[in-house]
Length: 552
Image (cartoon, rainbow, N blue to C red; front, side):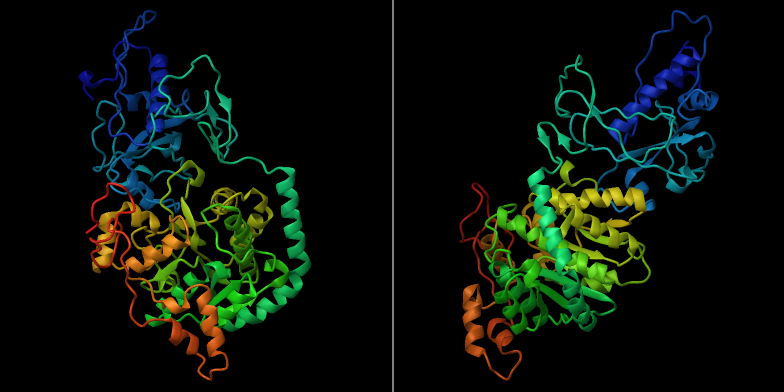
């Protein structure tokens, strides 16, 4: 490197190393930097000698003085790094930023033809991730948010290794605050603190004791329930896999649509096991040709009505049923696909999940990407309404732990499940993978990704499934599914009217009498809103969002 490219002039070596520490903290806080531009320092007054050393040379010459005997820094493309060393987190989209790697003494990469110029930062760029990590015997990865005002510092120090991040904030810990009170001391907080919002708090005594009661009820009825389930699971499982669903009569019309749509499109649903939380739902599911199990002891107390909105008391009560059903099926030794009832299939996802080779084969759990990239759902942002689980000791203990921690569930169990998964991934090596969101789209894409929805509506893109999440209530879910051409339930069978049809057809020798009466062969398309995705143009319909133009 020429003298003109030096990071500093006439700075003693110790002062330069101190400067490098500041640059490491800055680089990590920015998470991915194409170029670092260090501040220019005046010559040190106390220095009698002149030194002119590049950043990389400073590391090489001071391995004993820097972090744990550091050997240098390197830069690589962030997306390529995440693809090469896939921890299962959602991959960035059109993200061209970089990852910064700090190497200990013997982990420094070798100079290669793929290493670019140091640039003003003095940190070489490697076009191949494998070259930059070739000498890494162990690699620790920390992901930091790329939003906000980028006022985070990242500290690396020698000591006993920890695989948890120690977090300190000043003031409220709001990264969007530009003018911080510098006098206030940085204080230790939990990972759920975000400004005035605290996403995770310890359950209080009432919540703890409610969970004790639910657990005691489950344990008391466990032997009987497991004995019954063993027989049912043995009869429905295919390739040791069961599709698990949970439903009450308030949401049963969405269950009926999944069955009608699935069977009309030729998908085999004989390995579906519905956990009905009331007798009416059990009867409806059975009449549609689905295996149903009603556990009076554990589910008989749950409400029959549908939730009015996400996170309301009825919604929350149903969460424990979703935790318990997955735990039981997994505990009894089966792989499972858990899915909510507001899902339709374009292609059979089990064909993808059952591939013995390929990028998904090594993972214990596969999740739909929720779309909500918030601190509450970090780091996986996994949707708890569609996920696949392979039975093994890691998943067995995960869902048992989730059951024990159900007192933390105050709305959806999604956030609690994600945090427990993150802990188990670190402690036990649980392998979790978030699926490609374009292959498994949801209500997030319905409202926020017009290009993808256009491709799906026109048939240009065919995903595996579609999940009508990110929707206020059942009423809106029905309207959106009907408008998308994904609705197959005849109006005469919707909601309570479906029970009347069952009564009329009781005793019919045709086992598919209810299915044939209630399930339309062709999709039943209805326009409701011109500004929402639709299979056909709905330009004459009103807008649901003020000021929105026609979607077509």
